[in-house]
Image (cartoon, rainbow, N blue to C red; front, top):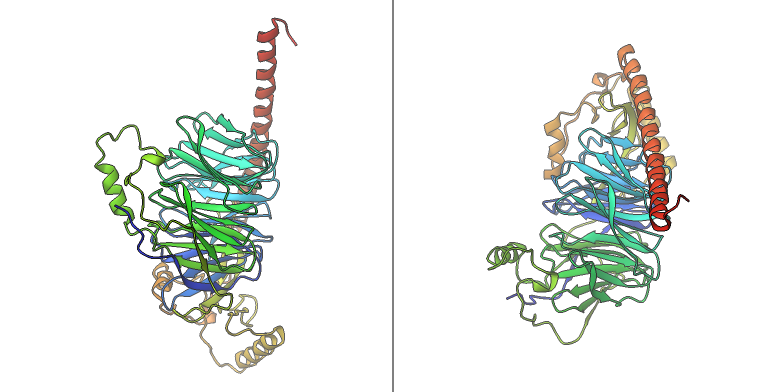
Length: 507
């Protein structure tokens, strides 16, 4: 029987973003935490005691969403600059660019096998992409306004999306058809997701409400009105027994889905909470908001581990059909307090578990990916630009260098260079693959002499290949537009056919 072990508690307060935090997501082993921000950056936080944290700044506008690949070797981000990027979470800082939409991209998510991506955009479309081939797969076009969020089902056969047209749509990825549309909303929908078994979806919106739908009956089975402002994000606990939500009322709410009630209200963010997410095991959850802070929390309120819950599910007498949301072990009530618990986190809280994380800021050096025709960016850390002996600027939050100080430091390095004093630097373009892995263990990356750095001048063959793949990219975009127009034409023809069948005469 599940029971309350303790109240949720804050583990760490992560400071590094310079604007609102739009999304947070844990990697599969919960050792890294990714966060995106309106400051145009992606942060990868190493949650070990002395771990190094990285900032990637290649997007040209606000980064709206981030997600780790289920196998953990890639990170996807979406941005208002109309692109999606695939990153390798290491000091190499490589990223592949998808020229994804014709308007801001609001959401990005991997399928559970890591083979595909789904994106949602202000251009009113949902698009699916092949991760391995780095190319467009198909477009889902039935929304009539901005699409805010899209997610794959656990088996990757379905996609759910929501938007400003006040609908939540369910799509079949095989037929590419909208197979269901939920419209019981009084305002725009802001977020949507499946539970871990794919039997239910939850959605939130501007009407301050959270709703859970049973996909087998297409009916609302739970409705929560616990926030006093719009609900921006939510996350299912891996056991599906709990759900956390973040709202513009500056609070995080924790719901017990078995008993169908609110059990905790967390205060800590100074302003709207824009994103929340559980770790893979549910042991931790994270939150971010307009105060530019990322908070790491320890769950505590469920004494039973995710593995124990799964073992109980496997011992069910009737495993088919899958258990209903309100029919999950344990079926007896939890011994929660009879009243909702408010947990106040001091606004002046300091992180007692570790010092401020060491943040390395990575800057891009463009290069063309000859395999896929997409822009690839390799980031340089404390390195030299290949056309100049001056060091590339590298700053940390603790150092806080001014532009004048950086300029003076660069001048000193130039003088040392002219005098023939060799200084070793690190260039991640030539770092071995196994050296990049050292970052995860807190080790220092190896250094190399700048004279050994590659010139970076593309050969004639590479130039030709780049031009070919640019043309292929244009062709891919053209095919995408033609597919969208074809879908609209099919819808119009279907409407005319339906009218003909009803009236018995052509329209």
